[in-house]
Length: 429
Image (cartoon, rainbow, N blue to C red):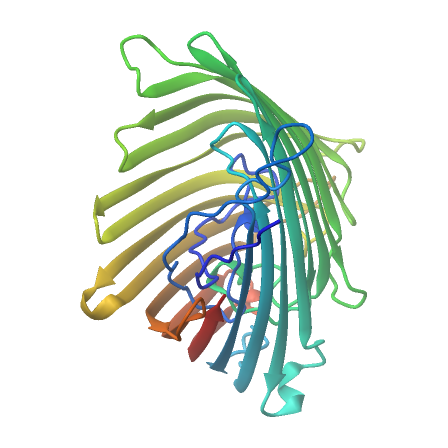
């Protein structure tokens, strides 16, 4: 067996703000993420091969790739506790990652991947960590088979979240810096039919918060089935119907079941532009006498556009409903949008800019419950990076970054404003 490495720095742009049952499931196991909140540049790939001969006549390790990466960052955080009264801190962040991948999802045959990321956060003043454990761990993987007409994929991941991470996509409005064990499992099957596809998905998520955080543990199960067809007059599009069903079980809340029929549409304008959208109507019922069931319009979608060979843009938007981790007997309607733009500049620089906005409108889901909280959450991120050639298969990168996060709430204890600045040095092998 011949193991070859792909030189790239591990940090990809993740621009989603989703609920645990979002239709767009994250392939977090397919990319290493920097542990310091910066965005990286993907370095050049290589053509890799694995064990080409086997007793059964197929490769056990097609295109096997083993990647190692790491980074060191110095960071200034203006509000490390994310509360109305800020507590600033300086810290160092260290990240080590390893990923093993085999096969290609868009090719016939099997594929799998395993990914581990370990992080350590060291504050210059030990009191500034506010008692948080400095170590965090992420482990994920996927396995699947792509046949002639059927594709099967299983994704799983575990994150020991100690509330230290400051990545733009991991700053959370409601749970903030609370420690938890996070589990995700998703299974999907796609079957090609005449002029269309039949798709089935199922999944399970769990957030198990540490004692003393004051937050409700929450778990969700869902199933999703959809049929999409390609009209003869629009060969680049697919349109169809789907139904998602699921259950939310949160501590401090009664069990909630939901059914969401939806209209779904995808359109690949060209190799540089694609669109997708789902519009549904959710029926949510609560398993408690006299509880307040609800009906809600929900949607999600996005646009990906490679404007030029040096500029890429992505826009995503969503509206969904989920129980509150923080407030008993309350749900929230979450509406948001996120934009990311990546520009390659002269001198091999990469400028990545991301902007996100979310409104959370809370409402009572319990008998006699009272709600009234309303949040507006704004996030801005700018990252300027440049690759470094360290020789041979070892590549590097340096970057400077700035993040701004602000939550304005109708209830003052939930407000916070945070600015994060820093410099990062990383490597990939």
